Image (cartoon, rainbow, N blue to C red):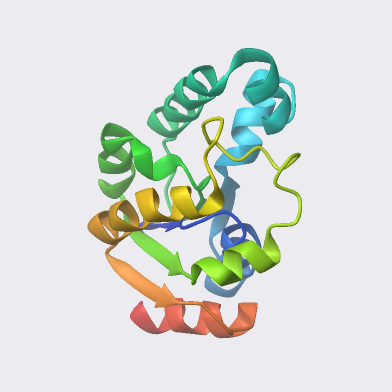
Length: 163
């Protein structure tokens, strides 16, 4: 079975949805943020703080390009959409599912912005990221799930319905 690649803003529910979706569909699960942390041997925010955003982006793109799995739900970091070569690599053996939420939902859920490891330039706001990323999520998505107001199980049901 092809992979299911979850994309979307930070705090849209990619990781928790991915775990439940993988269990529901009897697939494997990979969180690329965890792969970056494993590769770098430190938390995402520490990578950004110590090495800068460009280094983090290079590490993230490398992890995505090296990922070679089948029958797997892949939860990506919110910034994964910035790397066209990596997205095309993932799409070769899977479908991109965009978990779409409103900006206000992200702002309400994202209470650990200083420690979470969000790839944002100094001076950027979550609103800036949202405006920059949403067109890319929409461009690459094979499936869009409007996840605002849905419980994890409801989001999973919508994805399963596509398959």
